[in-house]
Image (cartoon, rainbow, N blue to C red):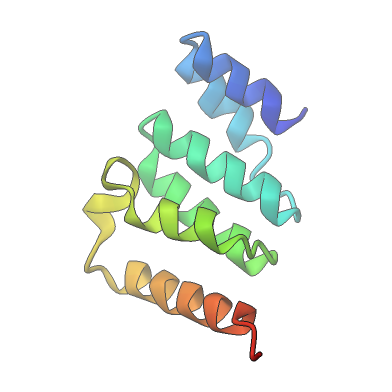
Amino acid sequence: MHTSHATILHYVGRDDDAREAAAQLENSRDGTALYTIAFLQCMTNDRERGFKTFRKALDAGFKEIHSIRGFLNDENILAEFAGRPEYEELCRIADKIEGEQVDPN
């Protein structure tokens, strides 16, 4: 099963099926796939799980800083997590990723 299957289920209004499909993909080692799953989980109101999957995405090497910042700063996704130690840790990881991508020239 691919992330696109779970995403399509969400867009056709089958959020319960989308959450189930996403849960089956949580053990992926692909950072991009995990990011997509995390986003989908948040969009289907499974934010706690999405938050954890987002961390897995970063741990798996997802480094697209604009997507990371967008995820962390989207009020509809993680606003309820702001201020929690786990959220602050994700922000520090994002800062580190961004610092690594700065062109020294």
